[in-house]
Image (cartoon, rainbow, N blue to C red; front, top):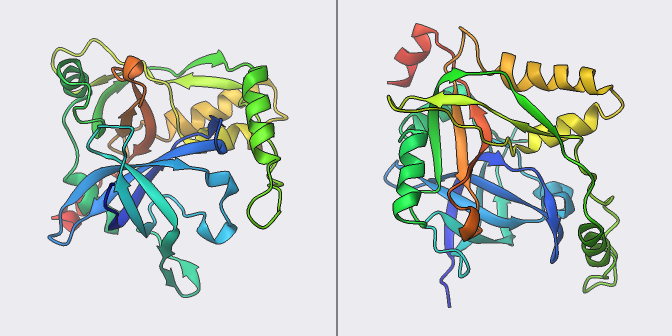
Length: 278
């Protein structure tokens, strides 16, 4: 039996929801576990049926939550934990749930930058349970790559529909709309800071990308691509910011050598920002 541990976690990323046999659809959440000694360690929280949580449990990115976690019995990666959402607590300030602004989260995240993406991939080549979450610096970023996502399979739709139609202990049925597939899969194409890097071409699995596609679902393909490019390339890669990717690999052992981009950290380049951090 895995012992549960109370954890304070700075949420850094929420991945795009995917169909699930057991939960309708789930997301993978990752963040930094804040330790009593002031240090922080990466933590992956899965599964999270985020769209199906009560509204007061739907935490935001860069919010610090407290929740009981237990090491995953099905995933040997050190960062992987299973949550007990009945124990979740969120902090409020002036009537609003508190999130860490750039000045507050900067000192925490700066300590976790590295290793390079090349080094992370090499680590997994040696040990499939090696470091599976990281914050990697981007040395060069090429244009986004788009491909059609396509619809969910009949099996995926049937699984989501069947799961959500099952009444809970109180006889209530989940009325959350069935998850709609996004129009595009979007990939970054970038160089990390390794001197021997030839390029990385990961898919972006950021919930904000799925939300953006849903928000502008009535736009044409060209218009939607332009909106995505502005949000995930132009705003993320320019002379005013330093660009880092939150990355993580897949739980499936067969796919574990593949890392995806789960989010972007883009602190400003201003000199006064650095002096405020240290």
